Length: 350
Ligand SMILES: *Cc1c(COP(=O)(O)O)cnc(C)c1O
Image 1 (cartoon, rainbow, N blue to C red):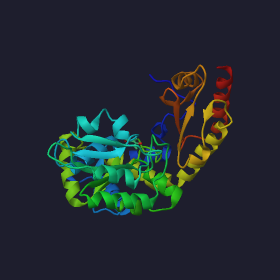
Image 2: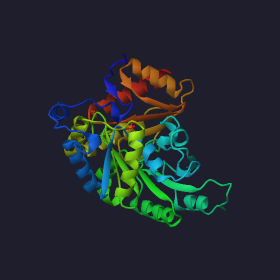
Image 3: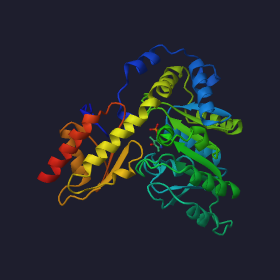
Image 4: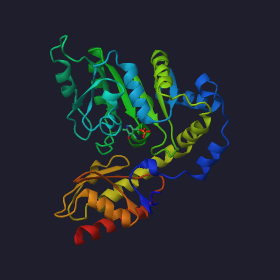
C-alpha cells in the first residue's frame, strides 16, 4: 500500500473525492452506455457538446484513451506524422502510444514551455514530400500545457497554427486535459478555444475532481470513427453513468473553484523563490502547475522527492533537476507555507 500523504502535490488526479461527489455518484441514474442508453452519460455528452461547440461527443475512461483514439481516428495510414510539442503527454506518459497504438511517427517541436510557433510548424510543412517521406497528418497541442508548466496558449496563436495546419490538409487535435483551467484564467470560452480543432477532449479527473472520465468531441463523422476504435480498445463501458455523474458534478460544482486553486499555486511558487538552489519565476505560474529547476550541490530531484515523502509531502521529480508540483481542491493556502519551509530546511541541510 502506498502511504497517504499530508500534502499531495504529485498530481491533481491525487485529489480526494468530496462528499458531494460521492453522493452524486451513488445516486446516478444508469443505462447501457455502449447502446447510447445511459441517461447520465448522455446528459454529460450533451453538456460537453454545448461547452465545446461540437456536434457530437463520446465518453471515455481516460484522457490517454482520448489521445490514442483521437490520433487513430485522425490519421489515415500507418506511418503518418503527428506534430506535437517535445514535452507532450503522449510522448512521455502514455507507454509509447503514438508509435505503439497509433502506428504514427511523432514530430516533436521545440516549443517554449510546451508552446510552439507558427513558423516552427511551417518549417515542417514546407519540407519536400515524396514516396519515402512520412506524411504530416495531425497537429496536436495541449491547452494548457502539462510538462510545459501549465502555460496557456494564446487564442490567436491557436487560430493561426490551426489555420496553417488545415491549409496543408492536416487534422487538428487539442489535448484539453485541463482546458477549463485555461478558461478560468483567461475568460476565453472553451468553445472559442475548441473551435479551430477537428478533435478536442477534456478530462474530469484532473482539477475538476472526478474519480475518472473524459469526453472527446468533434464532428459526427469523427465520433462515428472514434466509436469503432473505442470498442476495439475495450472502451465500451456499460453502466458508465456512475462515472459520468462524477464528471457532471465536477463540471457544475468545481469549475468555480479553479481560480482559488491557481491562486494557491502562485502563492506556493512565490514562497519557493526564497528557497536556495531553486530557480522559479512565479509570474510563469498561470494555472495549477509549478514546474521548476533545483540545482543543489549534492541532492538530485529524485532524492528530494524521497526525502519530502518521508515528511508526508508528495512531489514529482520529472528528471534529475526538475520538480513538478500541482495544486488541487484539497490543497489549502497554509500548505504553501509548510511546503516552502520543508524545502528550505532540506536545501540548507543538504
Ligand atoms: C493527465 C493528462 C493526460 C492523460 O489523462 P488520463 O485521464 O490520466 O489518462 C493527457 N494529457 C495531458 C496534458 C494530461 O495532463
